[in-house]
Length: 232
Image 1 (cartoon, helix red, strand yellow):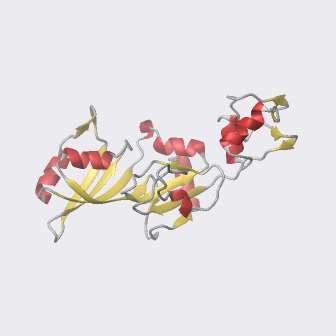
Image 2 (cartoon, rainbow, N blue to C red; image 1 turned 45 degrees about the vertical axis):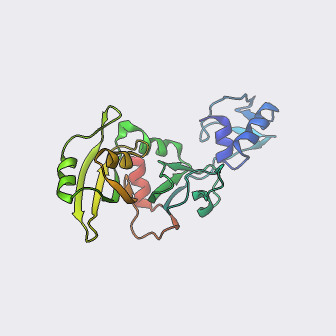
Image 3 (cartoon, one colour; image 1 turned 120 degrees about the vertical axis):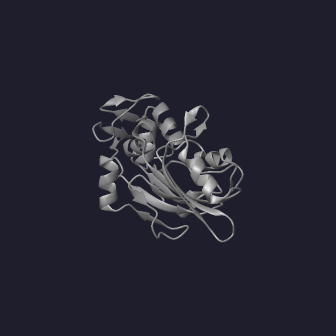
């Protein structure tokens, strides 16, 4: 990873401040003065700042039940609430797959870059489960539509399975399992089927389930979940 990112994850400084330290010649990697753009392995390389060795931060994995109205970013130019206001102060923590401001549910965050890559890269086809309340078409029409291939932006949607259940209000409760994470893919799928989304929640991401985690609360992943993330 980039040296400035490694320093930020270790809690030394922000990325911008880390770049300033590198430019000032205060950072060395394996005894040599570092330069901007250098890549390092925090577990193997000896990194020092002002002569003090920097140890890699412990890997953290967090599950958050993101509420509606929060944006998935550290700082929002519009001044909206961000998910990081709900989380502990963990250096280098980054999100794994965004949720838009009007979507709630499971959001994973980690300091493990390799693990985040495994969960987000398209070639791994990690499954995500969503529950969406929609209206606009009868439940039986939605079922039939979901049985056919749905193409968005020139690519078939990676829909693994679905379940559609009518509810008393005339809406339909739809569960979708997707093996992809394109931007706003569930909402785009619903738009393609002429469905209006009333509520959208992510229930799972890979081996991690939202479960009974209350809205706005977070937890560390269990040992079993961590092993599944590493091996999945």
